[in-house]
Length: 439
Ligand code: GLY
Ligand code: MN
Ligand code: MN
Figure: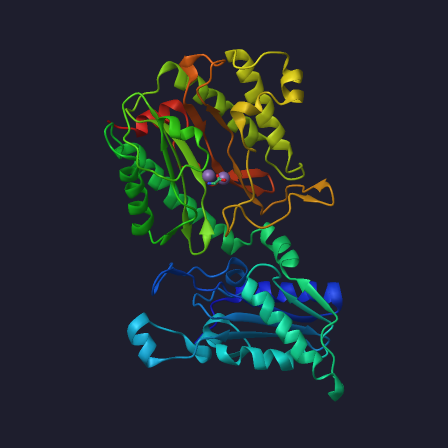
């Protein structure tokens, strides 16, 4: 069978190149995630580990990628479950090493039970071992056992790797800048998630419970082939919008309230992370509109600040400034803009930063600062832009603003010319949101 996964191979080669740069090569071992029991003999749906998925695209549990980089070149190995007619009858298809090697573009593939014995040979006399450290406890233990097994052979004249390096350092840097294939998947995750938000706007009715709206989101995700959510959907009506990671999704909604939905699907391993806030009854009230327009102005100002060459932190400062000025104008805080920014009194209503990296993980891999120096945005980075305002009831806040919570979140690709808003198909202006809420 033809290898259709050249981009995975290219990523493994990039890892090998980086290993040569760091330690003149070595052995990298990247396991997939363990399966996790939900209750008795039922497992949580399996999701491959993101690093493993990045390097292989291989979907089954009990698997590991091995990359060997040395003076002679590189070897790419996959360990995976053997074919098993009995288990395949119960649980479904398994590739098995032979087909997996061909389809996923590896040089060699072996049955997973051979992993420890094979690694004891492969780790001999390597300058360094690269693996995730502190990601899976059982894996850490396995790596220590591997090193000890090699060390135990010292009298035969062999040595264990001197250095053990957390491979995530290299992979995080690689994952920060998305390649063309990743960008395509993120466009698709956003298109599906945008459709889900539009469906939620169109179908939500006063008297519904939040989980009924969640069902509309899931409907759109699944029918489009996005088989998982990127994170638990937040469907937060009325006062629940002021609970940042609200989970219950069971409140009955009323006319006159806002509904904040923070939801995105995972499409072939890649996340969308979109928030929209809209009126349950289809029309914003006056105070709701004032807060909404303020957050929207902050969001537009942030988007303008996303372009190559600027510090990651820049757009967060823009959000702070616009929101703080808005709170001053509305009488929610007092003082001058500089005072409000310096003392941070505005943070009472802002609560979180204006965004984060996005990719396979919703809060994706990659440093925000390297040795104290902020990352500069470069084409291929993907980040969220998500200012918000949350006003909890309090004696010193006029009642007219109570329980208004608004967040507007888009997913943005940095491009050579500035940025591309991957979420552009999700209604955002007051007019567009109200038009999408056909009641
Ligand atoms: N949905 C999580 C976040 O927006 O960061
Ligand atoms: Mn987010
Ligand atoms: Mn979000």
